[in-house]
Image (cartoon, rainbow, N blue to C red):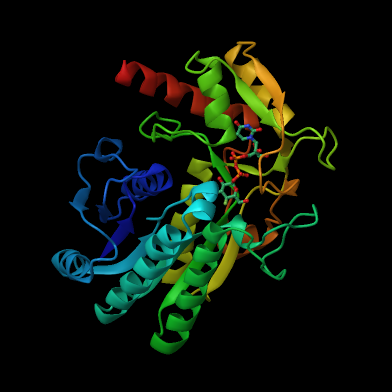
Length: 328
Ligand code: UFG
């Protein structure tokens, strides 16, 4: 029995691989290395370079290792890019997932953990979002993921697959042991940009909009430590192995921080008073997205260990400093 992790050399996938390897599981990674790096992975993990949309390649890996479980991370994830190039997202995230699931079913895979996103909810009112509200994604990225959720649900009904779909909120931080972190050179996410500003890798950062209907006027998000997120996947796997029902679960802590609060924490943790200018709103940003997180806690018995914004920021900062030194 082995677990196939697609996109396992990427940011979140590599943390899942570390968590599985730490738990003594047999893990196999497939990655096309478009945004992933093999050096993030432990040496005892098998890595095969290739594409999830290549049925022949995936079949050969499943057969080579006797795969029975699949954790599907490989995806494009940049919301504005999905708006300007939607077919890239429907091709990469939706069509290739269709091929992957079809191949997995043909090869007898029994359990699937799928990486979905809070972007499936669309513009929400500001209250913590529960899994059963009506989904209404507003970006091609969110839609490409929602369609994949639907394919998985239908495939499970028809073919007896079992699955857990995890809807990620704002993932941040890095492995506490310093083995992996967000390594793609083009940063778009708030905490990575702020720690780069603190490290002098950029002259300044911008705060996108201060006129939102939130306590300080800046957007509020539910930042989850990537190591807690990886643990949620490990817990989901144990849950399915012990006969748990198919489930869709939010991955967030259930509390939000504003952009200004995050910037203040980054300045306090790094002890650098970097320049943060007030800029205009960024297109498509909802004011507040916070998870309702009681379902994942109750269903999986998930107990986050890193629910602390200072710890998340400190880990992201340490990783960015390491990357900076590596690339110097
Ligand atoms: N922000 C800034 N300045 C920056 C970068 C970000 O002010 O330089 C702000 C954004 O405007 C937003 C907040 O910080 O208000 C968080 O932005 P991120 O880009 O870090 O994350 P998003 O909330 O936009 O996106 C995240 C995931 C997406 C997912 C989405 C679902 O990264 O993959 O949540 O809501 F689709």
